[in-house]
Length: 436
Image (cartoon, rainbow, N blue to C red):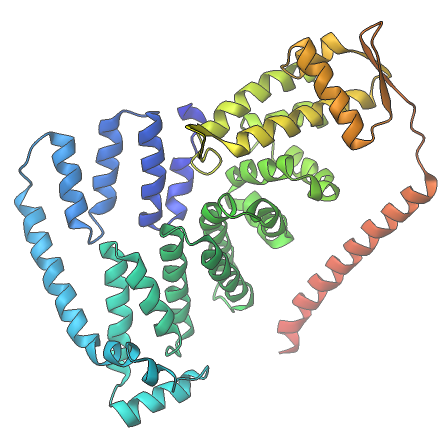
């Protein structure tokens, strides 16, 4: 399964603290030797202030109670630096811990700065110290404290670049604390900031979008409505172009979201075209499954890939999250994926066959005969499929469906209208800088 592991591609686009959950997942699955995972953790910790954690891992890796002198000296340095930053930010922290004082703050940063300076003798140095203290807290692994201080810092910050940096830190802290509702709010706030900010280079903006999409994976595959929202974000032209340019491996997650989300079928056809375009830049079993069903109509290959998809999902840190139910664990996304994958095969197979042998179809769906027959009956009943089962011959008979000319005309008109709107929006974006 290591060949389908995307950790090496994803990690460079994450804050190093966000890589730890991925390594924990891989360590639990034992895809790689435990020694390699522990060494990777220590390498990550070398550039953080989580010295105690690094010491614990060192002891576990080398089976000893002793730690290098360098780690001990580093711990003394971190504790000293933390105290110095706390003292520098103390006047502002004291102010922020007083509810009556905080009520005097407004949404206007300039008003807040003037208030602090005139009434409390708190100036730019203390505000900068609060940012440095919050950042240091994050590096120490105190994500709750860092999130609180970064939120308060943004109410006082007038530097757009520094405010953006604080927003990234706040998002990372909320993700690591698994506060998915708050993290989603911060994600949307950060997206608006990136899309509206004037970057020195267009490539910097593209890179920011790529980082945002990678960080969003933690949220979208944990939040209740995430599988819909990942399509809304990744499938936007600007973000899809960024994926195709620099991060085609993210197509795995967009493809998975499309497969398990029945409400986004109208956008699915366009996504199949994207897969065809990117077939030489990125491939994995999930992408190949869609190709087999919708491009090559190779149902034997689709059956093979469906089994591989299950393994990919179970071994992916975002897709393979387990839920404990009645003394056993399950992977909800895996179950939904396989159910919808069977539906995709069945729908496509029915479009090109009028009479289908249930035994043959059972093989295509990786089911035994009884389960396949029961599954088809439920599908016909729930989806109002124009089909019936001939029990005598053991076949499914499809009723011919004639296309409605009026519905086709309406669908084409809707697509044309949407495309026109996109072109108009792009034209406005291109002309605005020139007008300025």
